[in-house]
Image 1 (tube, rainbow, N blue to C red):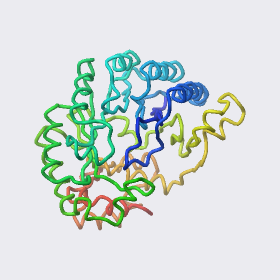
Image 2: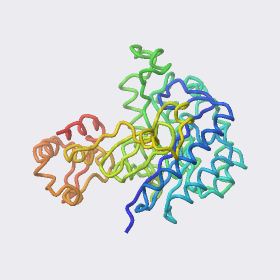
Image 3: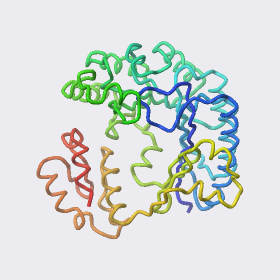
Image 4: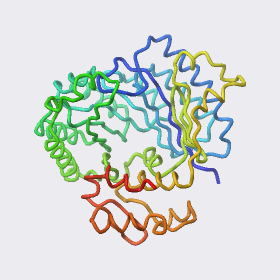
Length: 383
């Protein structure tokens, strides 16, 4: 029996950096993209030698904007992954894509490469709101990209949305939800805007709450999302993720349930056998590295942190409880050799008394109220 493994492949390029984005990404000329892909392929070959006892259950090409790459480059990455890792026949393989970067030729290459899921970054169906975000596409361009995705045979499509945007109102958010649901995607991710330090948005909006939707309006958007998508047949399976039955993102579920994952590419993070580590984050250093050299492990295994049993139990709880089905006491006992009530009995009793969690036999999950204030509830599980 091979251990399950998820692969995350980082593509750090985008057409233009969005004003709210704090990810490791940015524009680069075609020559640099080509050089990066060649180096990434070498890394895949190098890294795979360490994982002979694993079967890959999912692959996620994220960024940045992976769809910015030429279709041939993406095909080459996937070809090397399949040659070097034991990919499960039913593996979920996702590529993130932005409207305006998808052509029929690229999509056909994706299908030929074994990619079976597309995650489209829309954020808003309002062109004015998209402009505020610094997005390079319009809603009409998104629609054309979505149509191409469907026409080339993809039947598992996710759309990313973002609420609490500058200039956004409850009514404009409801319009976005309605327009997107009418397209009948299989999956919708709906997040609230986070103004991160170090981004242009932080300079514009930090300390200026009058320029963003207020707390009450943001809360109304949150409730409208939950109610409307439920009425449209989407099941909320995680705090910010909704899917048609059977179309939940298996890759993300793996993160939340503790499946091991290997990050490939610039700055990618990994979690293997209780250790967290990450890759080199400087592009020039990454590109110049001899992937077959003796020092490559130091480049690809930086900031190594071994999790203690206490930290593993904490993550089991505050990641697992993000999912609406919650966590299992039986699984807790299998992993840690201890009863969940012996470790967290005081916290669980307090949260249950305040109706923030629901205890259903061996299963524990957040209540609707608990989901509403999940940041507080999840923080209670830090030992």
